[in-house]
Length: 81
Image (spheres, rainbow, N blue to C red):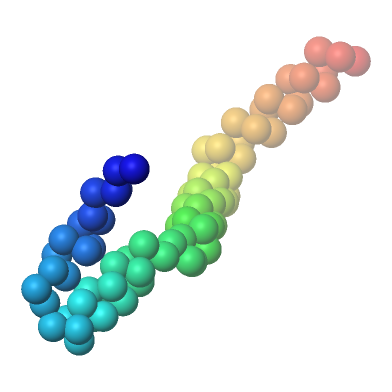
């Protein structure tokens, strides 16, 4: 039966004091944990959506766009009737 090769954590902790080994294990476990990653991604997407919505509101409030949309609607209604 072969033994698995030691993990990088075990290799790094070899010869280290027990306190150092515990700290190293705790650090690795903390870095391995991805709790909250989805929440952070959700926040970034939400902020991007809010920014895009603000941009659309600013564009649609402009007089040029308003005139263009009204002309388009008038043309469509006159064409249909």
